Image (cartoon, rainbow, N blue to C red; front, side, top):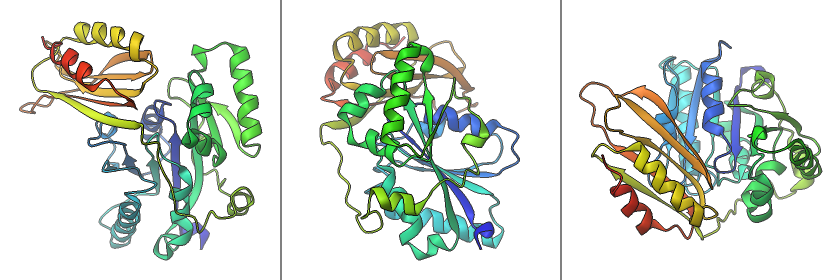
Length: 325
């Protein structure tokens, strides 16, 4: 029975830990697996779906009307049911599912879905929860955010990212802290979005009995709350923008508001550039890169999502509006 079930990987980690970059790496590898991706984002509009490589016929489904672990959990059940139905009917071919959660997701209710919904248990098997941990920002995130702690606590694999941005002693201290929080999870590293596939797929790592030992109410407790201080908004601009102006403006903003800016990312329409520009940042770290070309006749629009505490929305919108070419 187990061998006929569709394996599911839950890819989690706090805001900006590198989940989409790693997922792109998985999709590009010649592992022979056809993957259905379920993408969840926090806020009114998604960006990650546009960042994912879609050259190999993957089925990518976006859920951005809330957090996958609470308001859209019913959608998750529905989508998984539809995927299983299409697979049985032969209208959609895939071998496994990867669920990329929003950085504010508690993975427990997501994992719970695979044990308390009968239709899901008959078709899917939770292979593992893989948690990415940002070595640069994790110490503070683990201190301040319950979700970051839960993501580590429920992990079957922990992948450290951005270890090149901190010194070896800080990495060692973080590894020790993570091992104390979750002694059963193997800790490895993902550098520039690259990780060993054996740390990502076919782990068979999720152990329900082990989870019940640390959280006896796992199968019955469906409550989950977010910190109301965390909000998001989307900036849109159809006029071509000036990348240098954007970088100068945001560099100045993060000097003052960096601690509040948990995550910001976007697809930019830059004047004189025929390709999308991906812009991403976490607190005071930011950067941009070229992505796929704009299609002929496609409406070019810049779209940036900001997630944080007490966001200076008016100042951000005004500064970005003044960054048009």
